[in-house]
Length: 409
Image (spheres, rainbow, N blue to C red):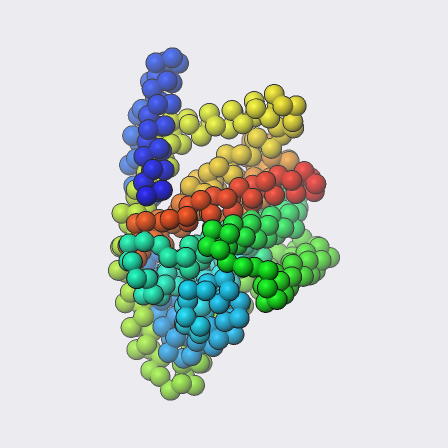
């Protein structure tokens, strides 16, 4: 229901802004631009869905081997003490726990191509436990908020973009980005737990969250002692080594269980194409709405309003130049990426705005894209508090990014 209202709002607000621009400013290009965006966004949605087919096929096949080889079940047992508190409605030791962990681990390593198929697999398993197939359950919402909060340990792609745009030190946003994503994820967990009445004040969760804080501090300390070249090498190598270790480890586990690894892979991979096709309508709907909203000038109007409001209150509005990236990120990953590159091109890769836009890009994930793809893949229409919790986590990430970048840069 919430997505329904948001989708309607995209078109209504876009039409109102475009009408104002036409009547009062004589802008004859705004409506053609909006119509062009509908065709371009539809094409993009289809290309994304089809482009996912190969990756989905690969990783759903690998996950099937992991299930039959006992890896997923072993992960579920290992994480049971924590996940039974974050996901109390999931039966203890259920295989979906392992799938959720694999998805979160892939996101933390910035392995988008691996994370999406693993997430879709986890969502299918959660749907099997869902008594009302068209309504999101509490575990589904908690899982999606963990995705949308975008915890990232190794932001390889952002550092590559900074290098391409001529940054003197492409890795200088690493520590601010790591801190920002940690705060957005923590906020997402706290907000969702409050909605679902989950008690986080217990020994297991305090030790887990404390351990996460310690791990983040250790990573910050370790990478802070490396120079640019070494940091890039370690980040890229770690991500790829871990990814290949997962694939080989799953295969060896299947061999140990004496299963036909090849046939098991084929069985799981068959779901890849059908899953990719199922999400096309949901992606088209969401990306077209976002495209029209952006083309109408409504996004620019919001940013200008924020800038004037901050300046009227006597605040520092230097961050406003990077806001397009922050506001676009929940709506479109590719759109936010374009905004980030545009900010670095306009203001300079090493400017405050350029750096802040990079931190915005990595601070959270594409909330509406994830909701459309993940819920769409299993036919969930009633999202309950998923959008609210996801956007609150995004807001926490934006506030943290601004505060941390003022402190660092």
